[in-house]
Image 1 (cartoon, rainbow, N blue to C red):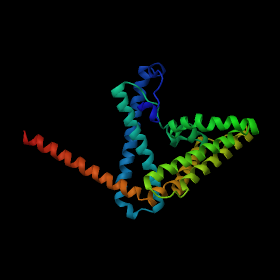
Image 2 (image 1 turned 90 degrees about the horizontal axis):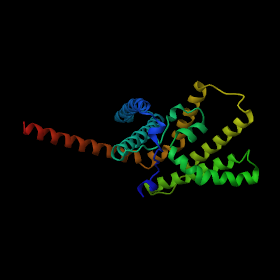
Image 3 (image 1 turned 120 degrees about the horizontal axis):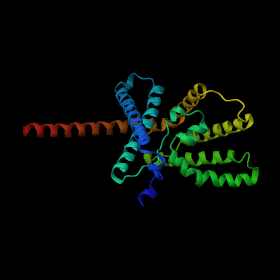
Image 4 (image 1 turned 45 degrees about the horizontal axis):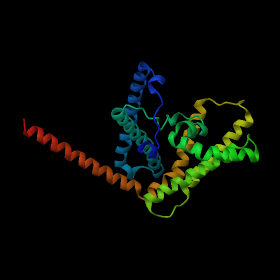
Amino acid sequence: MALACLPIKIQQDPIKENPSSKSQGKSKEGTVNYVIKGLLLAIILWSYNFIEYIHPNIIKLLYALHIYFFLEIFLAIGAAMVRSFYGVELEPQFNEPFLSTSLQDFWGKRWNLMVASIMRPTVYEPTLRFSSAVIGRKWAPVPSVLSTFVVSGVMHELVFYYLRRVSPTGEVSWFFIFHGICLTLEIGLKKALSGKCRLPWIVTGPLTVGFVLGTGVWLFIPQFTRSKLDVRAFEEYAEIGALLKSSCEKVLNHIFYHL
C-alpha cells in the first residue's frame, strides 16, 4: 500500500542487471558523488550567513541549487534506508541533470524521473494517441508535450497553494508552460533538421543548464521568497541545529560523567 502511494519504483532484478563487481564500483562512485554534493549543499547553507551582502538574483540561484542538492541527497538517503531494511533497490529520482544536453534530455531522462514516468502514461500517451488521430503522428508530440507541462504546472501550483494558503499567481504554471513551448520548438527543430546539425556538448550543455536555472530564478524561485518559505526553512534549520547541539552536549556530558 505504501509503495503504491509513493512516487517510487523498485528496480527489477538489480543483481542480474548489475553484477557484484560493477555494483560495488557504482556504489563507490555514488558515495563520492553524494559526498561532493553534500559539501556543496553545506557551502550553500553557510553562505546564507552573508545573505544581506549577496545580490538578490544570486540568492535565488543559490536557492535553486539548494533545492536540487537537498532533494537528491534526501531521496538518496531514503533509498539507502530502504536498501538496508528491505534489501531492495529503488529507481533513482535524478540522473545528473547538470549533464543535460537539451531540454528533452533534461525533462525526459534526467530530472525527477519518477514523476516523468507517472506523467507519461497518464497524460502524454493518451494525448499522443488522440492527437495522432487528429493531426497525424509526426506532429502529435507537440500538443502532447504541452498538455503534460500544463498539468505539471497546475499540480505545482496546487502544492504551493497548500504550502502558502494564498491564491496562486500563475508564475509556476508559466514556468512549466514556457518550458513546454520551448521543448516543442526544440522537437520541431530536430525534426526539421533530421539530425543534420548536432552541436557538441560543450555548447548545448551550458546552454541547457543556464536556460533551466535562468527561467527557474525568474519564474519558479520567487514563489519561495514571496511566501517566506525560505525564512521558515532557515528557522527550522536553526531549530534542528540547536537540537543536535543540545543532544550532543548531553551525550558527551553523560560519557564524561561515567568516566
